[in-house]
Length: 331
Image 1: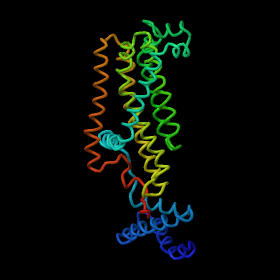
Image 2: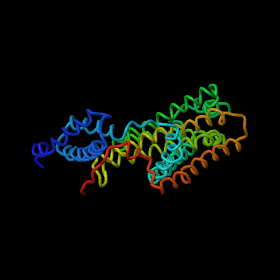
Image 3: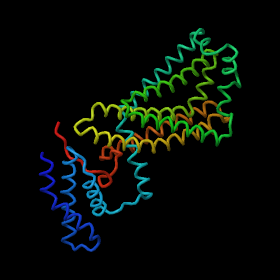
Image 4: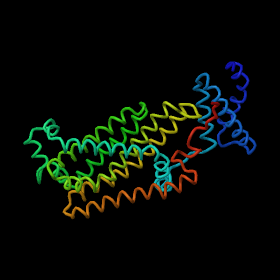
C-alpha cells in the first residue's frame, strides 16, 4: 500500500470528522449519523495505516471520535458484582487447562522434595545444624509459633500482602516467556517441601499438615491460578494464534489484570484463615475442615458460576465498548 496516496485519498473524510467533533453537541440528527459513519471508517483507516507506520494525530482523532460516539462510561457497583459473579470466575474456568496441570506438577514437586528430605538425614544435616533443626521442629518450635507470633489481624494483613505480591509477580512476569513464573513456583514449592520434610523427619508430619492445610489449600490454589495465567501469557508471546502478537498480548494482559484483582480477594480470604483459624485453639480436624470447605467453595464458585458464565460467552475481558476494535488477520 502506498501510504502517501492512501492518506491523500482519505484526508477529506478525516477533516470532515475533525470539523464535526469541534461542533460538539450542536450537531443535527443527520450530522450525528455522519459522525458515527466517519468514526467507523476512520478507525478502519487507522488500523490499516498502523500496519505500516504510526500516525499519532489520526490516533488522537479516532480516540476523540470514539469518546464522542460511545460517551463516557462510569464504573458502578453493578460492574463489580458482574466481575465477581461472572467475569473473574469465567476467566479462571477458561484458564483451567493451564493452572490445573500447574497445580498437580507443583504439588508433586513439593511432595518429592518433602519425601527426599524427610527420609535422608544427610540432606537434613545439609540444611541446618542439628540444634537449629530441633528448634524449628520441636513442640512449640519455630514452625508452630510462626502462625501465632504476631496479632492475628496484622499477621493476616502481612500474609495477604506477601501472597498478593507473589501472585502479581507470576501474572506480570509471565510475559518473559513464563521463565520467572517457573522460578517463583519452584521457590514456593521448595519452601513447602522443606517444611514438610523436616517435620516428617522429626516424626511430626501430622502437626505440619494441621498447620498448613487450613489456609494452604486456598492460598496455593490462588498461586497456581496466577502461575497458570502467567504461563499462558508467556506462551502467547511464542504463539499468539490467529491475531497479531500485539493484539493477543493485549487480550491476555487484560485478563491478567482482572485475574490479579480477583485473586487479591481470594488471597484476602486465605489470609484471614491463616491469621485467625490456623493458630486458633480449634481441634486439628476442625481447622482442616474449614480449609477444605474454603477450597471446595472456591472450586464450586469457579466451575458452577464460572462454567455457566463461560458457556454464555463471558471471557473475563473488557466489554466491546471498552476496548479497541480489531481487524481480522490473515494466517
